[in-house]
Length: 605
Image (cartoon, rainbow, N blue to C red; front, side, top):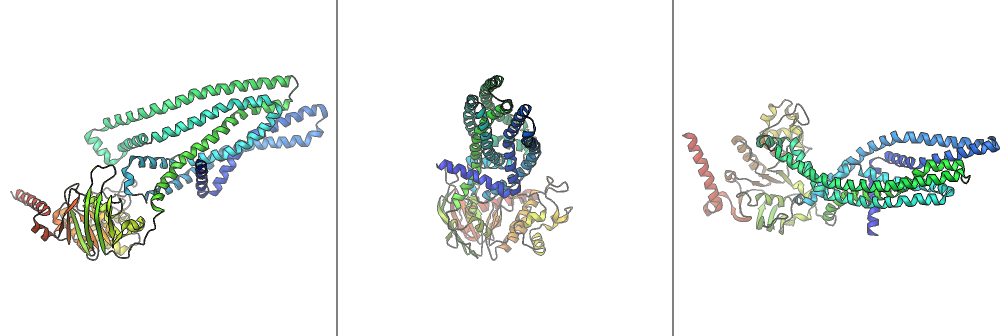
């Protein structure tokens, strides 16, 4: 009962998407399906009655049947005309509706992806679920499902019409044709289950094939492919994966062809037997000529209708399974968020606290953070330092709510951040990630997209503060220049340091109460780096700032330095205090200082 209610819920959801996409096109689709399945028995019935009238007119005269004759003639030509109209009208409707539905389902997936935790991307099975949901936007599943539902209903109507006439002509032959179609219907239902299971199991292989293909057309990967000559290796990997996929797929299809051929032979043999019996009875005068014409026109279609009747039902169930992938994908996020009674985010941020926080990434054996505790107070500038893998970026991810701590809690103003709605909580942060995005839009759009409300004056201030003015002056269309040649032939490609400055400007434009910079100076030259430190100091005068860096000269003027090692917070204090302690920070700082001194000496020589 639960499966049945879920099935009808899925069908209702698909119909809802169609209706919301376009009411007029949905009605046209229903009309088209009704026409397609209702025409053939009506046209055959009109021919039967026309033939019967002609036979009776030869015996009793035409005048008594004249009115009926023209009614059936009009019905015949109406069916003929509707049949000719159906094809172009259906093609037009399906094309427009496919575009509408694809856009609608993509919007739903986008809405889900805006809410998922970053941990979603740490599980391969989640990518499989996402891929299966995305397939609903790229193929005709929603349209096919609705076609199957409406087609099933109209098939019932046309079947009842044809069956009621056929059974009056010959009960045994009609039953024979019906029974011969049933095994094919049962087989198709079982085969559809196998196809769905195959699609589900092969999702990861299809994702791998798409990924391998994308490497050849992506500009970033194409550089390594050429310099390392990995094209042969990647091609062989693609071919071997494709070969294995095709082997399983063709085995499935070959089994269908063999069984379908067997059932097709049964259908044709029973149809021939039915033709023989009806023609023999007509020759013996037991069946009227009009009934013979109806049988000859409809028998094959009736047999096919019975098969399609079962096929449509199987396809409705099958399509419901495919669409259920989208519903399951949406449910994953709904289960995490719907039951939470969220608090409003604070107007001002006074403190950030990590209280006994430990964390392990999904499927990881070791803890990345181990019982980390510290408190930051506004206004304050803090710097996270430590070797690679110490847990610095993980602290930032936990603070942003991308992951939940394995144990302990992250608090803002003494409140656990899990009590804030994620989309509201993100408003508190201006972030420059180490792996920042390079958007294929204009330079100005790349900056203001984090805060579309800023005016021209504020934009110019940010340009000056982040050192973008000299970059803009050299661009052909100034700040309106597209930063990609992929979408604009007049676009430009900037250097890593220039993109880095744009990412910093984007974070600055948001003007949030908490500033997070993850290695913002990694690609900057000495001059740009000096300007960045000046900007960071200015931004954190009345805000709370956290910067991750490996260049310890950055930490000298910060209010607080947090030193991490092997996932533990081992030191905390300002630059002077930590040098006096002569611990890990002092060792790292002195090491870098000696390195710079030795380089300067080498340059002098």
